[in-house]
Image 1 (tube, helix red, strand yellow):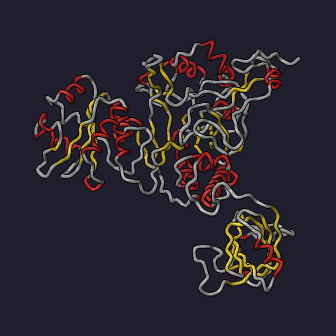
Image 2 (spheres, helix red, strand yellow):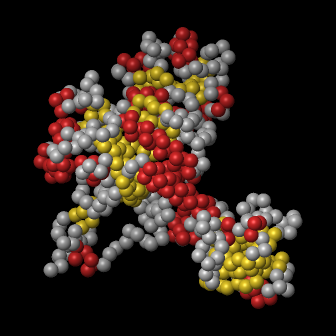
Image 3 (tube, rainbow, N blue to C red):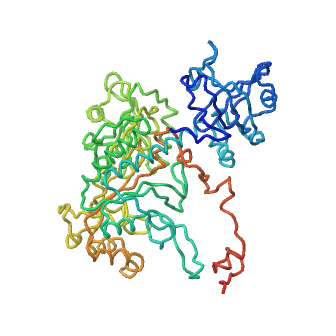
Length: 602
């Protein structure tokens, strides 16, 4: 890091001073981090973005500076100059990069006062999140927050460096576009010049990056802001940032191999070494073994199918599930993981019911191979032995088993597996591939795209050369050319090979129940473009906030977003969302709910 341009306020970054500069006269500037009065000597820890430097004020050497230091308080802004000296033996701070030196202050200038902050800035103690967001500019002064944003910066710089070397062009897409259905609600913006018409903020640059490929740019990327009006969780915000990429004349292998190499560099920016190639598992395998298409493999405890073990069982719970086309599945909680007392097992049973299961069967394997379980009396020794073998279970292990429809069993066991897992260690990354094209929406009695409707489909038994004529089969049997990359049980990136023929795109719209007129109205510009020679192309988008949060060891992406919203979508700092002036509404030709109609301005 280059030193700042010298001026009357500063010529050195405080956190970069080292013993090799002892004897030099330096000037630093920043905030008062801590102040300590030792009955004559006054010590101040000065903080700038690079770290801390101890300042010493000696009354006999610099009486004016010492007198000024007596009035300084935390978060005052100052500039100080003097000689850099070695700390006395016994006062060195080995935990501080600048801990061997201190600035013997000859002159100090107070540049700004500061009121007492609503929470301490000089430590990382827990603070109510709403208070942190209300005073976010103070929260961002804290060391652990600065470190998170320095990490984010390194990741973004690695993106630009790596993709530039690989021939990508950084291109921008519109922030104001038309509303298109992409799985979440759009944020809408009224048009003043066309009253009654609306723009939408982009949920992603999906259609525009495909147009870049049709335009012949071949390799595009963008670190881009996206917007989705959806209910928020720790890993969601109404506005978020993603790394968006698209490539022409590629297949899945090309995209995945490039992303493996890119991820290695991005994780290295966060101090994580990544071995390549990343593992890959199919969607079906992920759902069976982990109960989710975003598996975290670190806890182990894989789910196994127990249908063969209980195929002839007379226990009505198992027999009923298997006879009705369902499954019996379970996993083993190793004896060394921690005891599961009866009260905890009852809690897990209630959790399973809350997730949609009819119940939960639990059993503890005893020394003789038998089970300590409420259902043991309904099972034969052969059944218990076969199930224990399928789960690789031994004495002291606890078995958790669900008998239900396959999607229910997967969802419930996937959640319970994480609920009983010990705190994970390290990181786990893998690809999930070979997704179904659609999932059935039972409430609306229609198919929904599992990724998005621009993903290339694969007809049963046809493979990658699927044409429109091959897509007359049951849409529920179609697969897709989609792929997701998962880190620590969270999807950090998802993409696919796209549709590049208009007739195939229309078949997908038909399968989704999208009438031709509506498809033309919403996506006519894409369908038109596909008729002018679209290369085979595919891409991916990485959730930059989520990736940085995982690398920084934070539970919420709000910790790596400078000015995030609360779970309700509010901004305590600015008060957004907020009412607007009636004149603004009249100019836009809209009115607030319950308000008087607004007329467009002439």
